[in-house]
Length: 151
Image (cartoon, rainbow, N blue to C red; front, side, top):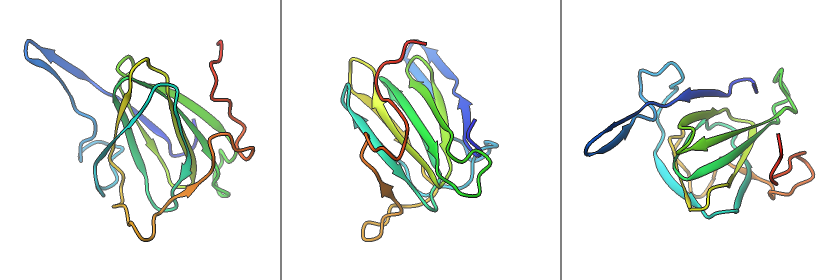
């Protein structure tokens, strides 16, 4: 596991009316602080990434569809510098992934329908000075293949 990355298995509580799933609570051991909450979607087969933050921690949950979330540790002072890791998250694996600052991340929608992602980052987005560096999804700076892998 990349240093500082934490996952939380999410509990889905169904009843005759529907489902409830708590994603992040302020009394969770992994909780740092609240900046904002936003939702984004990704169409099937589309890759969003790479990006990293210098201050912000992300708390990513895919609430509809499925994602392949990939991480690459770019922190010079990290014991896991250079390590790459991926997770499959969404309806069939309801987890939260906490991503530290300095870790490149991106995702690919691997479901046949649009994926819906909720993120609760620790910082608010500053429109005129975003805390975000970006690379193209096929950058040669990160050794990662977004294609299907047979495991």
